[in-house]
Image (tube, rainbow, N blue to C red; front, side, top):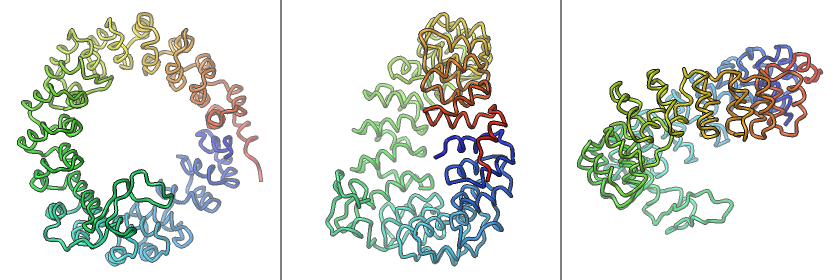
Length: 505
């Protein structure tokens, strides 16, 4: 890979005539960066495809090519991309449905709006991967038809398809009303009974760990039930019986469904697997009474996930904040707290509660500033990224709490150039803060020069437009390819240097 030319290909300031010169010498790596340019003209896109055919697929997905630009026989990946975007031609689908490469037919099966005759061809494909892909993306009527397919892998795909009718999904949980399954991926390849060793050392084996078949295709049937439980189109009545199923994975999937009746929630709340209870704890389907029960659950992850439940009462959340190690994240219940609740939370004697509130970025100025002056560094660190904080307040945060808040202050969108320079020079250096300074839109050249001395901040700083042009040019010969590419992509690289870097034919 030529890192300089790849960087130039992504440089937003690269003149159009240099884009043309790059296209003329592009390889696959350079073409990938050129194809992502927002200013690439239609003529340049056509020229790029002529030079590097592999770029046609990316350009098609990005809307740079039309059906008139594509020869489906010579550029099947581009044709498939346009078909997937709904702007291909029906005759392409008919051509590709007979393509000898399974990968092409499999991609075709995922395209929407295929002609009925093409759908029929794909549904009868000799390779089960193609039929399964079709089942995963099929319309309701086709999904219903494929639910009776003799191969279990196709039925598993139907079970995951959100367009599958609810009645069909219900039938897939038990198999009732459907013809018996005849094959699965396991018995396609192995003599039954067979259980795949999770530590399988065979390099040519792609069966999933634990895949098994004793003639009943049990692992794929289990996976089908799991897909049905995860499918939001499945009716509640079809899944509530799984609350007592011996499979932990199935009970676990059930616990996350937002349509569970309270009686089922109550049964899952005493499940012996902490993961089941944890998913249930975050489920908005549980009522307040059960929330209060789960708040006393011995499982740490149960209590932590309960804090993420959008309906958790604030008094419960306040209790959880102290010992559930929730971390610096904006919880749903905090995000929707009323103005009165926000005031109460801001005055909480529990610093963990104030820290959670400080994650909001729409706080009233008075509360924001009070949290910025909080004596607890965790609270200050949480509020440090809030827009609207003055330079004086940000500096006071750093004076009081030092390295603990430096990175968050550096990431504040209103951090001034002067403050960023001081943060970059802070002793001892804080590496994360240097990376934040390096990517800050208002970072100055002096601050960026300091960031270049840090190994992890250096590639970020190399791409910053405030970096002096002579420094950018020097970085083009750096030993780190990431720095080289970032410098070449820097829009402040002098145009004359750009021109010298691009070979002329």
